[in-house]
Length: 273
Image (cartoon, rainbow, N blue to C red):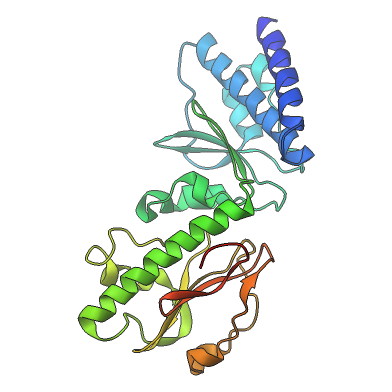
């Protein structure tokens, strides 16, 4: 009974605080559910004098609840406010309860299961998409970070990649890739790191691969923005940079961010180039 009362008080407090925030109604409700799940899992661990064991693979929270006491399991929310089943993922770093968010795509689970985060020097906050994630013992990470923040982070990484490419070209008199297809930046990681950059950023702030194109004399590195899709069919692959179809400043939150030959040629309006 004490657990139930504590949970209800917690839910009420969160509903008052979160509903007035800048997140959507669904995100606020899902945050409340994740907080409730956190309280219940912590109560289970306390009552059983043991830590909550993470599963060996990603499973639904319905499956995971079978390992909990019946009284607690029946109170655990099964779905988020968008109707997606909560998923539970276990890693060495702990236990994660994940909502896929409005787009119904599990961005966080993809990166957790692929083990890409440590290798790419990214935290889970960088690759959440619109997922909401409970990290047991640490709280909730909200993937609905502002588009502006994600654009800023992506621009910072693109400039870092571009600076490394420029430094490489000074030593070798060519750029590190000569290919007229858009390719992942990962392909030139070993040519740049650690001499020209300590760690090459491989994914943008939405978790999408940075892409590049190059010849001996010019290059392009780019983020495909929030939607992970190219804005246009890039037909610059066989042309000079003077004819690239770049539009300068843009306002579309899904806009591609492009750094070419030492400067941004397509960027979010209001940001310094």
